[in-house]
Image (tube, rainbow, N blue to C red):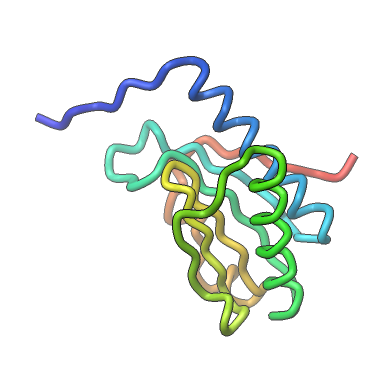
Length: 129
């Protein structure tokens, strides 16, 4: 029998606040197609949330990842547990344990199609206002 993790309301609100900080940082640096996937209802997921965007150049991918890290540390005092991919700028992953951030170069996002792999997740689309 699989044990489910109990989550209290303040933890959910904190995660949503952090997801919004991430999404805002992505959009400030011109990240494209910013979305969040809520994976909590998917029993095979290894995290609670994905936040995903893409950019057209490796330089912009790295700039977005740097800014996301900076804003989450500044506004929420939350450093990444680990990060990967910054050296090539095609797909940077920032791991915050219960939130995993994916910043793709556009071609890689189209190739890996995380949204399709996790199609059962609740999807939130972020747009500039």
